[in-house]
Amino acid sequence: MDVSQVEKVKEEVFNRLGISATENGIFSGSWKKGKSSRTIRSISPIDGTNLCSIDQATENDYNSVVSTSVKAFEEWSQVPAPKRGEFIKKVSDALENSKKDLGLIVSLEIGKVISEGQGEIQEMIDIGHYALGLSRQLFGLTMASERPFHRMYEQWLPVGPVGVISAFNFPSSVWSWNSFIAAVCGDSVIWKPSSKAALSAIAVTKVVASVMEKESVPPIFSTICGGGAEIGELLSKDPRIPVVSFTGSVATGKIISKNVAERLGRSILELGGNNGVIVSSKADRSISMKGLLFGALATAGQRCTTTRRAIIESTIYKSFTSDLIQAYSSVNIGNPLKSETLVGPLIDESAVKTYQKTVSEAVKQGGKVLSGGNILKIKGLENGYYVEPTIIEANDKVTISNDETFAPILYVFKYEKIEEAIKIHNSVPQGLSSAIFTNDIREEEAFLSSSGSDCGIANVNTSTAGAEIGGAFGGEKNTGGGRESGSDAWKGYMRRQTVSKNYGKTLPLSQNVEFRIS
Image (cartoon, rainbow, N blue to C red; front, side):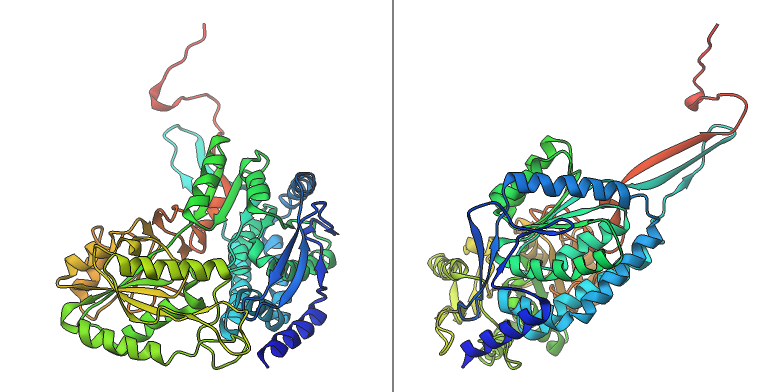
């Protein structure tokens, strides 16, 4: 039975990772019990199994964690960056040793299929390797001074404790994007995970904590579980936290951004995505179909980079959508712990209701359901949260397509010319990931030009989902403008200092200014 499989996997993994039915929700050098009378219940969306109960923190708990993190920063920031990188590599190695079990925790709590759960942990391992190399490349520039006998350069310095507020859909890897990079920069990190993914955070923290203890490293990584309205608000308003990274909804991101800005702090925002794919008649049919399917169906449509809109050239629209519908009909939906499953559950009942409401509203606005549209009750998984991946034919009257719905809903549009396709693509408020499938270099360049895709990520002949860690991840418009992971995203966790040195015997001033003292 499916239920017994969930229970069996839970028991085996919990034993190996040292997780119990009730867990402390605070780690800052040691595990502490939250003083709140409320707890977070981790429920598997696979079948409703109760996984774990986790303490919630109070404001006093929060202040204690921040005080510990401030002290840890003061010590850690004095460690040479390459040594910091070597420590992160050891954390990465520990995660690799526990990869299978941590991936299974993600599958149990979030409902990701096995390969995606394992991929999430692999991403943490990879970013650890990247952080090791980065620790020797925190470069500043040397500038030519206009004053004689002067040297001018910039250096990058640790900024302080960094707050990371993560979402449920990538419950561990997004934390590592921020935390491993911040750590090699010399910062400490306070993690406030989503209440829907608190168990995954606890499991990862257990592994990381063991390395900190073994290596006698100060508690640079802290975890505090609690409601976003309480702990998240405290983090965003706290002047002791110079940088706050938030991944989540646009609405909450605006609140976080306002709170941080009012105290002149710095926020890194990774908000909504409503990602479009242009499919040209000049595309490789096999590649475009596979790329579109992965983008639309991975993580049951619960990625910020999920493909939510397919903009298809009119000459191939009918045949391509027909093939797409056929492909959807063959998708295995069900228990993500089974190897043959491609699409698992949504995260909870609220997500199912939002899916249902969105499909209904799309139809009301003139959209036509081409495939799916129904809630599923799967034998043995009746308490799980399953829906049919859905394709809806849309036009500019179907304004619900402007909204991001965290569910496997794909809107398909028709276009005549590439300029029209780009206009449709850019018509939504969000600007995270984008893609075009074409073998026409002119169409490709139009898509990548200044008047092309308005997103932070632009792909050619590959999916909107599945970004690599080496590039800076983030988007424009309502996506918030933040950047995480690769490229020079590390600068978001440091402060820039311009240094001027006078090694001469006089004091020349810039801009030929003369200042005479009689």
